[in-house]
Image (tube, rainbow, N blue to C red; front, side):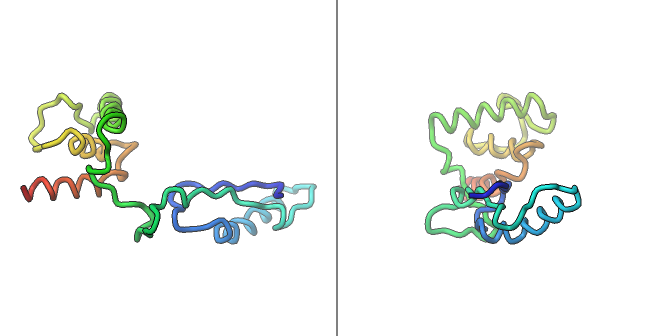
Length: 143
């Protein structure tokens, strides 16, 4: 069992604990040396808590490491309610996000699509939903 546990951040869906440790261990041990750590630490003391694979859909390996979601992936009920709550709060704290009840020039045929479009403008959610909004927009324009 390791004495030092490293935990990776977001965007590690296609990596693994060994490859991450290979990149982290030497830098971590160098840092301990620079910090005059009195204990003995070796590569055997360092382990990686890995969970990135939990965000990778079974049987798929997305090109950029993230699954491609569409508006169809948002289930009615809890998921749609949560999306609407996020949209309302994002509109409250971020002036770039129009609230659900605002009149806008953009056509928004569905509340999920509209929510994803607005959330993609927010500081917090920007970049998370652009593929879903693009897919939804393409589908809506084709009909």
